[in-house]
Length: 308
Image (cartoon, rainbow, N blue to C red; front, side, top):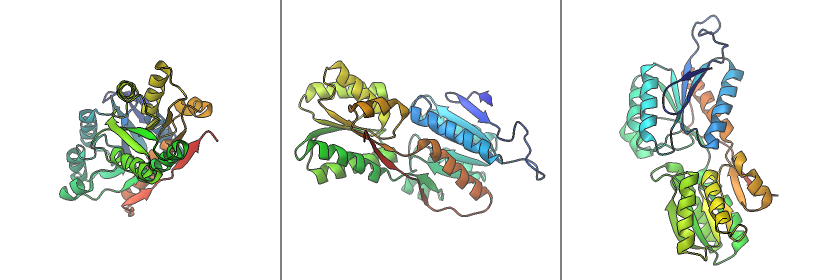
């Protein structure tokens, strides 16, 4: 592997064993994988899974790129521009913003680079305006959030007072997960006290929830749109001496939350198999390069995870 210099830490994997050519036909295609923050365990697992998958396939070169933080849209734009300049054959991207990445991806699209969208759905209206057809490979975030929200609703019962910690404003998966949470709140008869963003980040979630808890000490439950924010909430509860008093649910099933699940301080999370998500996207990209069609939405699996 070669360490490049774009965004956070960029890793180029050569599944062909270091040789730039494949078989008798010459060069194998190069696929750029653009992720969000590699400080987030979810994307660390995604990168590891993608590299392993590319090595197993053995018929492509993979370059992975991560950004500094979940909100580093500029870093992702630069990463896409760099991949276009390198003339990669395909880009698989988990966009930090559903609209902000359309312009650089349009440049890639017009240059004949195959685009596959994973994790966060690009905005449909923006895609149509740019005259782009881009397959989405990812989970049903609404259904997943509804499932973990239902676990919290069953725990608290009708009238339970809850707050939501949202992801980045404008990101499709953040909006979809809030929608799923709201469905669970409405169906379970819960009372939503407040919904605020913590931008997917642990430290920000700790600060935001500490303030929410101070303003609303009668909070009974918390719905967090990813597990990184759940960790921030759990740390805030520990600091306030209220661990176990307030039920928390998350989303992603990252390894870091397993002790909280087993100990009961995290009631439930949702596994969207992040380590495989980019692998699915790579397969779709290779199909496109082979001239095959892709569905508008290649739905990937999800699974509710509780201590039981």
